[in-house]
Length: 387
Image (cartoon, rainbow, N blue to C red; front, side, top):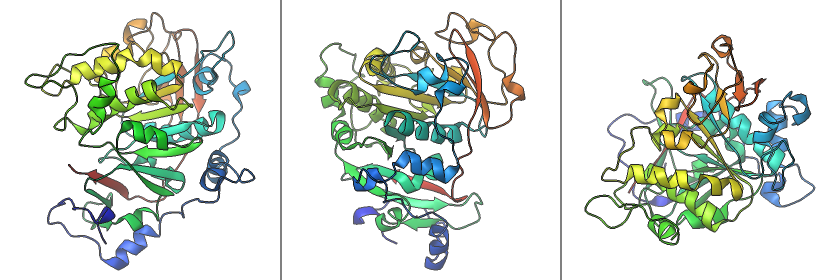
């Protein structure tokens, strides 16, 4: 099977790859991409992606009135430009924290469906070469990859003794609805579709990132030693996301957009320093544009193992928290950076089963459950984007 777009392949090493017959058997485990909905055809008489997803996973219709506190889950998940007295206008945010294997990624898929349904959002899932928890939503996915760089994809079994399946672009289009290429953060944002789930892999060359910053003359940031730009080709690929968020806020389009960012500690760690890549300065950039993100309809939903994994400058900005099961929820404000109070006076989430969590702000808390969104296969999709 060929490499994507016949570009230079990435050397995966000398390990065995599955033969054509085995590769076909693995690909056949995936559902057919959904190309009959309104988002795929433009035909208003068709079901939306959100409804199609709900029906596929048996998720009931969104009913905000079933929650006890309007300011907790409905306020965070429903977005409005002109909110009422008990609501926040514009984009929202939350941090869901919990140990591995406690349902964060499944919750991320569930929240994505709710955002499509409730707000007709453009949903952007942060793609990572090490994870592919979005695969449950693969049939509705628009996969966004950078132009002009080598990209290789493969399916890996959870059993490390099983051979991997190398994929070409035609194979990927058997898994996802569409594969798109973008040239820079501004170009990507112009390609995003309302009511659609996008998985985006960052450009490792960070093309166009410094240009986005140069067009924002409101604040100047220190540059790393021995260079005169904050963004450069040698920076970690994850730093592309700082420029993407800035481009979305400053240059739009300003339709409702949700960024679902798993493992936020990989991007904005508490240990961020003014290193040779300007990591701390970029964390400060994200912090500075947070309020404008709300104003321009960008919601930022973060997932991580622990509060302390994420830089405190970011934690100070987050107005909602979700405590996943298996770990005790906080009972004092000192446990939550950015909160002056917490509404819980006892620990409950350490006894929750997977599929139940606690969402809270400084005023109220509410337990909630979500429907499982299972992946179609035990294989993981690894997409590597080279330089």
